[in-house]
Length: 161
Image (cartoon, rainbow, N blue to C red; front, side):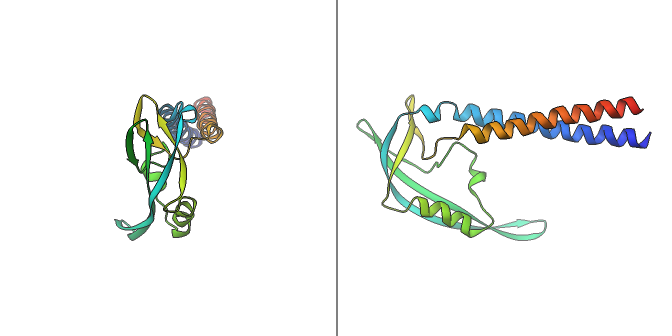
């Protein structure tokens, strides 16, 4: 009886984790749909720095490092300024290790010319990095695997009741 309840709880957790991943990656893919097909123009990096932020956490003060890449680009006669590296949420650009943020900044030094992908329907929306569908698909596969595995564990727990 206890083992069956444990399996149901474990399966529910795996199922919910899988569901969260599937929903999350679906939202991310929708936000980035077509980005790889957006036209691109040449832009110029105007600022490339790492900013440090100290945050209070339950375990104490935690310092994180965020690369800030500011670039300008022009579509037609209109000039634009953006800071978006990709379509992922801004929280994915924050690192606990300064070396990781430094590596991003090193790829986009101030003064460098860069390809800027912009939304033809809204040129203010632009990114430097087009999404990699393979990575998105791997996360989607992970979520689906958790859904199936969670459902199977729940079914096993119900059978054992």
